[in-house]
Length: 453
Image (cartoon, rainbow, N blue to C red; front, side, top):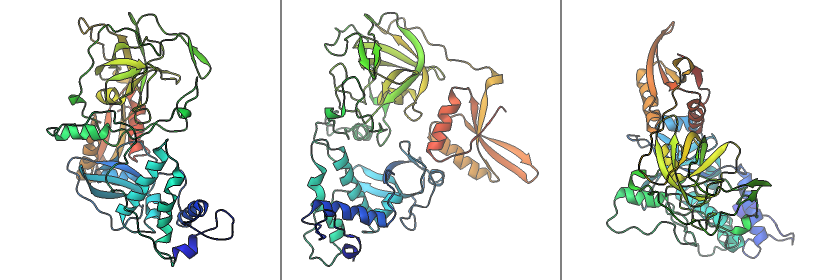
């Protein structure tokens, strides 16, 4: 049985006791996973988005043997950047409807104990609850985790604890950032509420004065897309300075920053980035709570609060945000946008973009920002694929369009072997190429060629 094969003596007392020894339980679980090839530090699941019209797909088994590019060709892509590892696809029915998930090798390892993908999802969600919780100890869950190994052993079985719902997100122990929805809310509002739920519990012990918050914890894109058309941009107005966050100078990572006396006349061009679930629900530098689903931003030197217009220079898209936080403390970046603001500018998938940031006191007399034009001689094209079948080329082009890469097109060419249909993106300027290449890599499309015609 699994008990005899994988249970180990973790506390060194000469006995294997999964119910009476927490060390035995955790050591045995680790040994069990290791025996089936668990990949330390690698993902288990990531939420997937289905392209419009994507055909339902169910693999023959749960072995992670597909590339992300193969899943993308079928219309399923991860909702956030993830390492390009062998994967498989799961479709589950949740309380909000059909959910699609991409599972990796570690998911397959969990199914070696129980072949049900629902069980594997429940185990993973339990682990996420433990990892994200900052107010309870993980050891509390040892008896439940021990059941994974003990249930099929010769040891008398104990009553099995009910597993969490496979599709219900782990519940946090802090109030939600967004208020509850009324019964009359539509599907779009319910989707926004799901995207905007708080998934991290915050512990200020992870923050050191003058440093960064939880520097070893990665920020993340929420599971899903936000319908920003339902959100209202803030209206610039005069507000008193917040009691917190305006001390000048202040130090972060040993570097001093000076806060401006006023935002009046401020205008700057540079790189914008954004921040998401890692900080959602945490207190900002101004003392307010960060809500990634509102139009806000962090800035190193503007007084808190301030209002600015952020314009993406390659598209001309703009958004008004209220600056209520400090950051970004990365070289070369001038503003950190909320997830909502980044979504409105279309950079939530790309990470960064070149922008102009201008302080505003009212919506009157705002001059338009000129889009940065690139000379024809400097424009480039990305060739994503070349196919002998026009239908295959159309599938890839539509997949790119679903990712908001509207510059994708098909070009027919003749070769010695016959006609081919090339899927290309362009024309692009030097600012656009790196971010689109990064997006393509995130969905598993490698080796994209850059050309001038």
